[in-house]
Structure formats: C-alpha cells, structure tokens
Image (cartoon, rainbow, N blue to C red; front, side):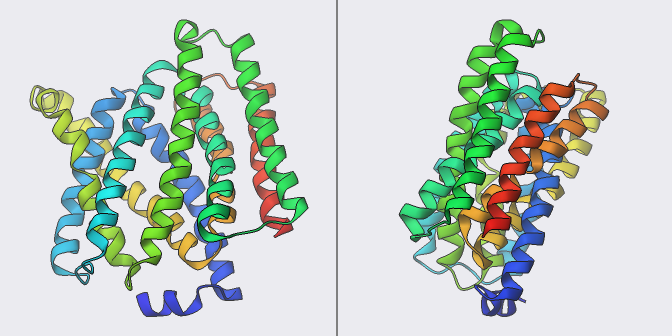
Length: 299
C-alpha cells in the first residue's frame, strides 16, 4: 500500500484522496480536542491518550513496518521537540478557556501560518481566490476572538491568556504540520514514519504526569483509560489522515481544509460538552470553515 500511495502523489487520484483524508482529519480532530478537554483534567487526558497510542504503536514500529532510514532519526528528534511544545501550549490553553472558545482560534490560526510556511519550505503558490479564502478564514478567527472577549462569561478571568495561548498553539500547529509534511516525504515508507512518530511522540507527557497517573484510584483510572484508548485510535486516524494528505497533495490546501473541524467542534461542544454556542459564534465558526472551503475550491 505504501508503494501505491507514493505512486499517486501529485496525480488527480492523489488529490481526490487527499481531499477525503483532510475532511476525515477535520471530523476526528474536533473529536480528539473534545476528548482532551472533556470532564477529565486536560493534562491527565493527554497523558493517558499519549500512553495508549505509544503502547499500541510500539509493536507496529518494532516488528511490522520497515525501520526508518538513518537520516530519519534527527527528523524524529525535531518532531519530538516541536510536538512537546505544542502539547504543553495546548494543555495550558484548555486549562484556561472553554472548548468552543479556544478550539476555533487554535485551529483557525494554524492554516494561515501553514500556508505561509508551505510557501517558504515547499515553494507552494496559491491563486488570488485562494488567498481570499484564507482572508475569510482569518476574518472569522478575529471576529470570534472579538466576540468572545466581549460576551463570554465562562472562565472570564482567564479568557485573555487563554486566547493568547490559543494563538501560540495555532502557530505550533503550523510548525508541526509543515515540519511533519517534510518528514513524511523524507522517508520511503509513510507508514514507517507514522508508527515511529506515535511511539516517540507518546513519551513526554506520560512521563511528566506519571506521579499523578499513579495516584489515580481504580474508579478514576478506568474511565480515563477508556478515554485514552478512544483518543489513541482517534489520533491515529486524524493525524495519519492529514499526514498522508500532505504526502499526496499540497500541504497548505490540506491544512486549510482540515480547519472545517471548527464546525464539528461547535456541534461537539454543544451536544456533548453542554457548552452554549449561540447563533453568532456558530456563524463565525462557519465563516472559518467557509474560508477553508473557498481555498480548496479555488485550487
């Protein structure tokens, strides 16, 4: 399958598959964010998710996929550092703000930086109408941030730092998307990259949280473990889908299309987490998604 994926990169078939994969990543990433932000402490949730996906990735990395080439180890080291910073910023963001407040800012800021980064790293260029789509997306982000600053009452005392951490997290989303897209293109087997990435990436947060994890009672640990297993599978398909999409098609387009996840985040926040979304915020989230759609359609 790896050979087939590599063979269709840049072809119409590859572009169509990249579109499907980016949309799949959008749905799953909204779910993943809700799993981390849900009723458990976001630090413990992230630690359990990482522990689960590293444990499940280990036998695949060690015994199923080809071992990475020698030049991949420094790339994995860089990915480890970037994703560690991203996860620390993300947990601090979720600590301070409601999911439907901070998630759209995180996911909406990322594609703007990613489009710029993809142009610098991969030489990707975009049509004027595609840039218009990016501008629509940014307008939705700024409008949402302004609305939240004015109207939101939940976590009001921590809202400004939450939005600041959300923007910083969005910048790291762009960094890891661009870097990982370069990394997955640097190896002959994309599934080898994914398996080793999950194994290496799942080390830091569980190690950081190990004392708190060990202190959990059985009644606390069992539901958290269930969330961790579900989150691990969600992460596999979400991150795997977007990485394969960037291998098959342009990085910027895949990253922007993934941010239709803001619509799914609004639905999850409302239906599952019981957060009040409201008509205005729903409309602004839809504007962010519309910008992503225009960018993809114009391409």
